[in-house]
Length: 121
Image (cartoon, rainbow, N blue to C red; front, side):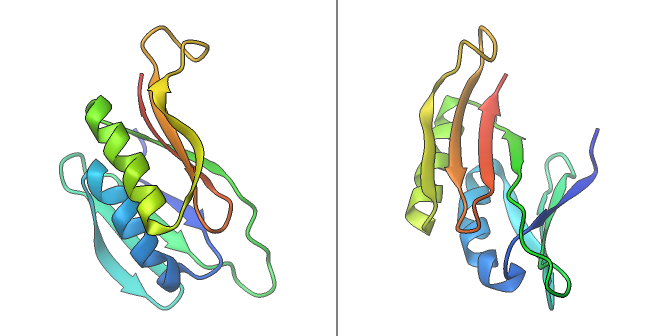
């Protein structure tokens, strides 16, 4: 079980609005904000994700993070929210049989190139 993760974005405080919309269908809400860091947490399972601005001249290196969804409607809502918030489609909601017989997911690229996924497995 992972307690929390850190996700690097160019400007954590500017990306808070995007992630607030993207993660809302998954039950995450903003819990804390500091210069260069913003925390979103899910009260249902206690998980949290921290958006962090890189220190110094370090570039943002895009990564992939997958969040577990409750059902297909949640995956669809996640994808729609991501597009509405300004993300780009990296995979429409749907089955991914090459990942597993019951795998269902959607993918959004955030404005920094991170590949954010909501999935049922």
